[in-house]
Image 1 (tube, helix red, strand yellow):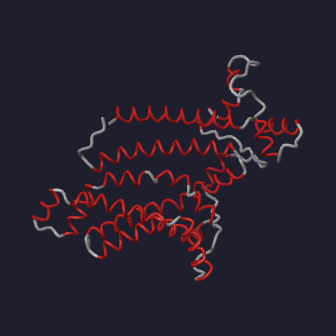
Image 2: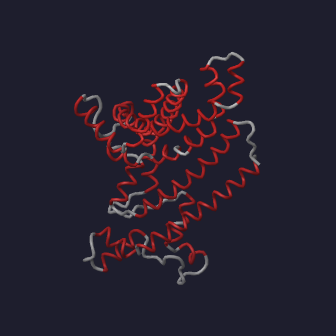
Image 3: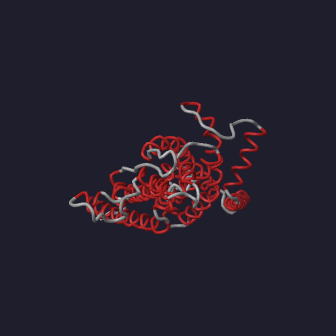
Length: 327
């Protein structure tokens, strides 16, 4: 396994370098530092003195790729590419481009915990609810419960998450007054602010996940080992949980594992609509303000998390199925 993990880490590092280079070139090809200064200062009618001042305060007054005026190591490090792109590999995210020019690393650390408070319970509940619902439909397959369950999954899958948010806020916050419509508080008070977005996000994803898991369980339930288990006199619920579920773990791990990066990055839509100060809302605010430093940082963090997640998924494969060998 160790040689395999080493190769995956090398491939991941190469992918991360490629994403970082592509992001840097794309952002600075579309917008030069002067364009970024005009966007943040407020329009085209700004003096060159204001542009130079803005660039100097944020380190954009340096050469983009190569500084020919310096010698030695300073010639390399005194560039925008080194300070804004290479420094990301040291987890030095620098400062934002906005008026406040806050430290991005501090914001990421503080907002990460808010996103985790929402995403970790959501991830666990999502896996449990989707698996249980899918197993229920498979247990009563070819019945009215199965038919209407599939219809419900398709309907839930077809409805936008925005619909669930709007209806949920109106019903649970305005009519029933069971939860605040938006906001956040620390400590145990966070539960009342997080309960509604977790519930609505769970409902929004339940249809698609349950329908996918049901298809995987139905594929497994017609195989020979399942018929052999039934022939031994095992109850149907034992067959489903001990045999079908265990052998369908690999696609479930793949589907659920792909959601893990959102545990750290947060939900863009739900955090914005419910006023949660997490990473998702941070990205939306950066996009609306055209703060490219924050967007570049979050693209890098997202790529890093996806690479780490799929390495963990490969390890989970070998745990779920002894036939899988990582070489």
